[in-house]
Length: 219
Image 1 (cartoon, rainbow, N blue to C red):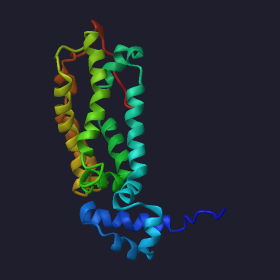
Image 2: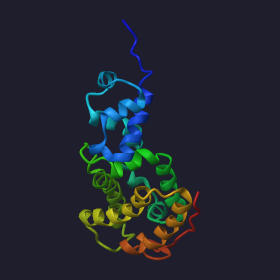
Image 3: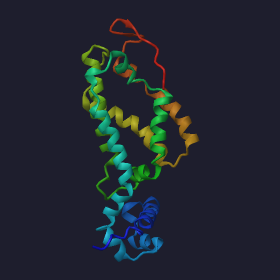
Image 4: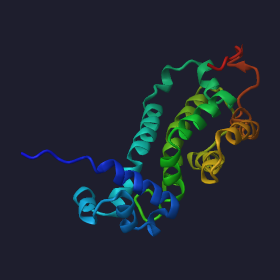
């Protein structure tokens, strides 16, 4: 049996990445992608059924990494978390925010493609779908905290989705506007100042179930 020729995969994907970033999915040209990759359209169609499958291949690694993050959060056993750890999970500090920004920055092109270039593909609603996934795991943390009496404000899952939509918009926008890390670092501090989740969901300041709250150290 003849071995599959994968030597053209990399130039095709690299050319497609540039074309999709430059023009978006709908306006991207397969002919331009093939010309810039120095391959024939026949060679491309041997590997991909069409433009959408090619787009999916370009963002596949980024999608996989983001899906793994949501899966990890959903698998966490909230019942086994201490009160202190549960409260700490809602702290907005620069270490937490910069972890997210660096993680996404390392996947910059793929993330931008999903955010602003995916109209016409299965990822057209990526921004909404991502928040939807994050809402499920985040609301589970909130419900656990509320059931333990750690917070006092009752919030519906729908309202949590609205709040997280606003929160994630502050993360999306720097990538949509092409910011570099220096700009993002300053922006991260502003996001931390803007979102006070402890106050939003009503954590008692300084105490957890009547016990003094220990000082948390960002790792």
